[in-house]
Length: 245
Image (cartoon, rainbow, N blue to C red; front, side, top):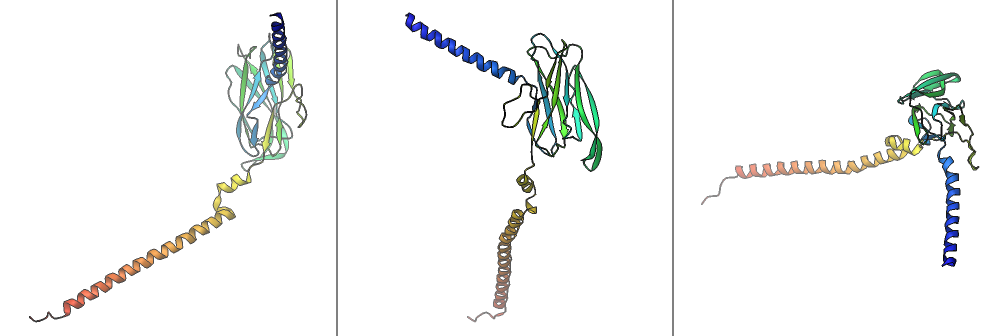
């Protein structure tokens, strides 16, 4: 019995150690500040939420500062009210100006700061989302939002490390929004008549309608001719004298 218990105990301890190591590694990574969704299309508008989890066991998150990237200015930035939180919007001059719906904008939002009021701070074991609307999204591959998270005990967590493609995730990664070019196929499908394929299809539709229309007209003419000949024959029989008995 002892020989059977020892291997089982060793296996259980090994499994527990592996589980602890995996969870210990994955836990902090899942608690990073992030932006959701993580992908969008260049030139589009979208609603995004900065998700801020509280990583402290004793302090609450009282302030969140999100810095918009200088190399990717956005013309329109608006925030959604978050109960118990105030938001301050800072702007900066941009050169060249940003064109939005035909207007030239010389200023762009540079920083958003949310501050908790009353008992609205993010407590241990909780998270809070801060929604924003952005657009038109710039013609860049990605937007990196460096973020500062301030706790009630005065500690500040700096999520400012820019991730490098192909490398390991940094210790304090900044939220990243990946941007993809607008699909040319989607644009063409939206206006099929303007594309060569759409024009070819339109020509084919016209060609397919042509014979059908011609046959219909020919049938109508033939029907009218038949009626006309029938009427002449009837009139001729009426003019002929009746045979004598």
